[in-house]
Amino acid sequence: MEMARPTVDDLRKSEIWRGRYRDVRFEIVKWGRSNDERWTWNFYLYVHECQVPADKWHLFSLESQTSARYPGRLFHYPDRHPCVFADIDFNGGATFYEKREGYSGHYVKVGCDYNHTWTLEFPLAPESVLFDCLDAIDQLWELCPYLKTDEEIYAEREQVRKAGEVSP
Image (cartoon, rainbow, N blue to C red):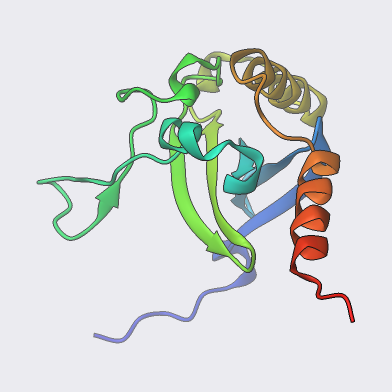
């Protein structure tokens, strides 16, 4: 069966805003189909393992779950398992969680969507999503005052670097 070639109107379109607040990276995404006026919004927080003391990383790094409905796919449910994200007021709960590996170690991406906002009679503005995102970061810091700032991480790395230097 031959499939029709997609047109631009068939494609998903997205806009992404990235930033950092209180040394937590975040992303706000607006997406939908090119020919649709309704948009879906998401925001995501990124927490790198170097921001978290080693004895606390288990509160951020969830074990994968399997699903009978989708064999072979792995899922993470931050709102159903003990972790710091379950106690943060994500819009509609934390509906996205992913563990990733970057060039400098592991990190988690956790976020939520606004797909359930069909009850709204007005379009959602990026400022509203940003407000919720920054509020979630404030809550993260309240729950986890032990998180390290970029400055602290840099100082630790500099200390390790200097300790590894050999004097002539």
